[in-house]
Image (cartoon, rainbow, N blue to C red; front, side, top):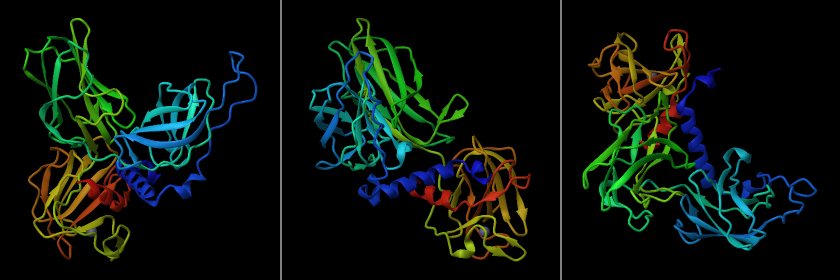
Length: 416
Ligand SMILES: [Zn+2]
């Protein structure tokens, strides 16, 4: 039951675990990755049994992390046999099919093809699959480093992206490379179109991990040289978007159909940013204390229902996740405290022992990363610290149950 109430924090921990597995290397795990199922015996629809492709060698060709080390956005060269009929490459990863990433490819030659590495790909073997569904065996394992942080494009700069002769000229910029769901300030993508007058403009927001278009804008063409912008707060309709890397892409079409794009249709780095679901709340040097600071530690007559984070008194506390402020007050044990019902989550976030009463009041809208108070030792506290509780539905002291916030805190601490 408890698992179903644990929202984003768990996802973050799973990501952290993946990252550790990457560091641990790939060789030991390769044996656990099943090969693609061989095709059933017999003839294909056309009456010709397609040749089973094989992979002999995989090497990194372009945009490599270092010599022959790949990462998201790299182009790999696959050498083998029977590759002419191949239409997709499967990055098999380490953990069965759950972490597989597929990329469609255009045929190269029978002995060679190229494939770009999607952001979802993790270290492990590749397999190639033909249009008839005939798969190769797994390649030797390929190390795939995690993608580097997005390249900032805070100022408008001309795009190196593809364009037809006679297409409009594009400049783009994105105001941040790190964004938080439900933060006060959205991510803003700005652009300027010059040269041949555009007949149509399209801005797409792409999930950079799988290339899917998350949202599309069709801004009206503006006067030549005028800066236009769109912004995004991490929602698609009323749904919160999953954390991960996203990219904006601008396409401008001239009246005669000539197209210019701010980035290619495959791997997008330009105008990318990482979307996170929480901010680490304590904004200064901190530690998580000893066993007595842990969730579930014994206390006189009860168990410790949160995790303590120790920091100097006066250290700023931000809302880990925005939402609606449910309660605020003073309690002899909790000291100055407040409870925030996290927007788009099933979690109540409870902050205790604040230096002073929060200036916010019940009912207030709180944004992710908003200042809500300072670390103190009000109430029954020894040493300045934030006591954070996280409660599942239906909420804090309304029938919900607290769960251990430490895995979430540790994950948030890695990126904010
Ligand atoms: Zn505590």
